[in-house]
Image (spheres, each protein chain N blue to C red):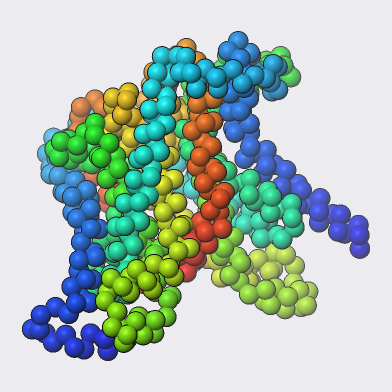
Length: 280
Length: 286
């Protein structure tokens, strides 16, 4: 019996260990680079020879011309991600409430338009989006990136929120109406409090999407002071002998906030975002 | 039905009820976003793509054919491998052992962290001269490793692996949720009847997961068409523009200031994309 138990455990480990190595190797390699001094970073060793935090110090002090605007770019990433999160929440929540609870006429069509947008591959929409942002005079203005990311993030958020709010009992709305509540009161005092878990999930989703975005950011913004940290990282590639160890140190700093946010809201994210998918 | 009863007071010609008025007002923000940033750009893009000349030029560009082929390979090979592995791994992750839960928490990392630093990290480990992989090959065998990203086939395969690395966790998570929705009694009953693991899979797991698996595969295909990062950041489309996919090709034309070609290359893909989109909309708007 116990021999059988050991065998099952061993079989599981045989899957678990390769999965861990596969998952962690690129991340380990990034950390390895980030804590290696310039001359040993490219020596090809599996272990850090003389680990140091010197690279981070260089990044924080902006001691390289690739990093001249590091703090500004980090700030840009924060401002843009937070704006996208907040705006998407506003747009998606109002739309989902109108479609699911107020049963607005034409709501189904709006939902279908949103779903259609959700299924346009992002890189395909990027080309016409770039051209129209030019026509609107928004190129090189951070609003262009914010609005583009709201456009990309909101369809999925509307859909997830609609799925979640369809599950709320309709008697709640009826009771509120009997008591003479206005639509806005219903929205603020009944709907929003009940939707908090889903709101956290989609808000986080939109925020992370915007923080992680590279393609739209590098198309729509170009001035060093305006770009997000993701574009700044991509700019390291413009030369063949860039300081890769500094790039990896900056990349690690850039990767930490989304990972931290994801793990703090993991509970909401997983249930909120997979709930809709499983239904179909 | 509830909606109907509540809408009764609104007669056809009566002024909008307060509820309908608010309903309309609250979809306006999204509709504005849709019209200004989706409808108009898409219409403008199609208008840019109206010249037959663009398509002639596109067909005469060998890079276009290569990219279309690469995209097809990417979709057929990478997605199917990814989904099969995800299906298998979802069976591993439904385990409730404490250490499997830890592995699951770590496994999600590629999806939770941004792609740029991780893809660039892989790019550096593949460097033929100082990369960690070729250094290890040299140390252990005394031979020079391959010039990974300088060989079109290898480079495209590595881009596909990169894509799998990045998006496998998400799809595994979805399929885990699908497996958890299957009532445990079904498995217990099967165990009592002496069913093997494989029989449990073919008679219980697969029938209840088939529809979710298909939806996920098609959704993943649509999204992968838009995967710019896995190719652009790893290979940059090189060597010699041999590893472009449609997502990076459009941007390449855009940067060369050939917007008409960029749009044309997207329009050419639409006959393949739209049926998938239609299928997904049917599924999800039920």
